[in-house]
Amino acid sequence: MDLTNKINWNNIFNYFIFSFIGTIFTIYVVVIGWNAVIASSIAGIIFSIFTITVHDETRRSWAGFAGSFAGMTSTYLLADQSVNPFSIKFILIALFLSAIVGVLYSVGEIASSIQPGLFFDGYGGRLGTIAFISVIFFLLFKFFFKSHSFTIFDFYSYNLLNDPLFYLTIPSAMVGAMISMEIKNAVSSLNDNYKVLSVAITGMIGGILITKIPVYGEEYALAWYTGAFVGMSSYFILMLKRNYFFSGIIAGVFYVVFRGVFTGVGGKLGFISFMAVLTMRLIGICYNVIISLINKNKISSFSSVNSMSGITVDDKYAQKLVESIMRAKEAGEDVLSDYRQPIGDFVIGERFDYQSNQNEKNNEIINFKYMNQQIKEIIEFITNLGVSKWVYLQKSNKDLIPFSYKNISDESIAKCVFSMESSFSKILTRENRIISFSSQGVKQPVFSERFIESDLSNITYLLILPILETNEIQSIFILMYKNYDANEIKRNMKIINQFYKETILRE
Image (tube, rainbow, N blue to C red; front, side, top):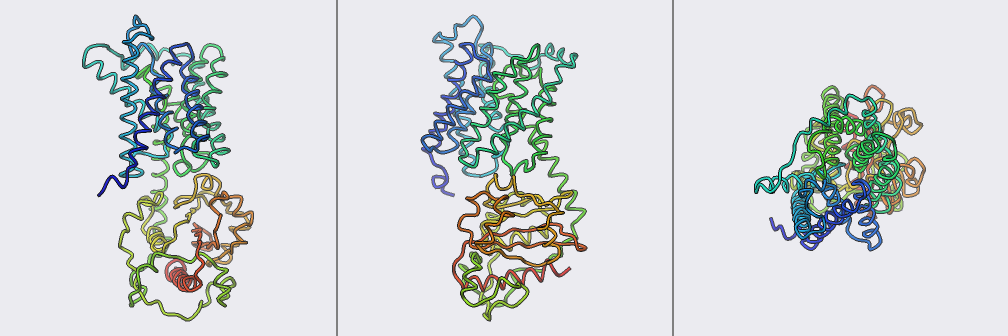
């Protein structure tokens, strides 16, 4: 594998510079007397506004923000209190820490370029975790050379647990998570740099207002900022608002539990947030696995999509899919009326090579590895046909919620929920067939209120594949297309309709 084709070295260098600057900047904002939460928030606001203004690449603002977390490290951990923070010695120490952060952040980005998703992209607190690890490396280096010592466990801090008021840090973290999420939800569709801005603004609120609360104001502000990182999580990680709510509570509990561990280490709050999000994620995965095991026989499997035709076809057709129902109508096919009717007379001349590059394609699909086998087969079918944009929704209590998707924005996933009691769900249950919508139909509120404009732009038609059991809808696939070739439309509509009958309706 040629790594030079996967890594933008110019960006990597810029990540180093931004995280380096973020660290040294925050260190000295703390030195001049600002509290650490405000210092980090100021850095986040500056970096996000800068990258938004110059239309810069998103991860540069993330790099600067990650550096700010390391810069929150208490000055007594950086050097002895006798050392003047403006002395050459202290400056060199600060520069050394900044360099470590820059290197580790850059290494993380290189690894993510080589193996996307391996380093927990989308998890709130990920940036803080990088900062936390960087500071630990820094402290271990100093300890190894016996130039400084640090305390891992501060047992005195646990005396705070005797005061019930201290436990208000838990709701503080939860509220911080929800506010951060709501701000992100309101602005992140404009530009991903706004995610940094939303957390920084939330942190600024905590640093200015929450710290004014008597007795434990600073503790509440730190817990608040911890929760704010939870709100930075992508919707494909937590998906529902209640998941952000519970993740915020978990973050608050972890803040209390680990109050006396690595006191003063920069990035600790982000690491706590990351562990909270990861915990919530694991709970969700376990729940889905259990549900999948319970429902494993609810969808009939099919023998092999590869045996769909005994004649071979040019592979290029296997990579494309129908995207325009209107062009099919122009070709004389009444495809809008009933998908159960034959669509044109033609011969499928090829066998699809469904195994080629299959692993690479599946790696691009959110939550693919957590699906049961029957759903995986359906996803592989639509992926191998060339569908590049789709979402799979699964029944959860009284709603259909997103469980897997491809090339749909986080903002749309956050809104893409259908009530089981809605007219839309009842229609799908009653019809029990593929339902299509033209480019005009896609503009209806049922879609425009759930998908942001950029996801629906240039969509020429949309297909919905409902999956029912005992006359009750269990899940649906929503497929979006952008094709204008009438012959390909007829060819693929036939394939999709046949596949739907032989797999989903067979039961």
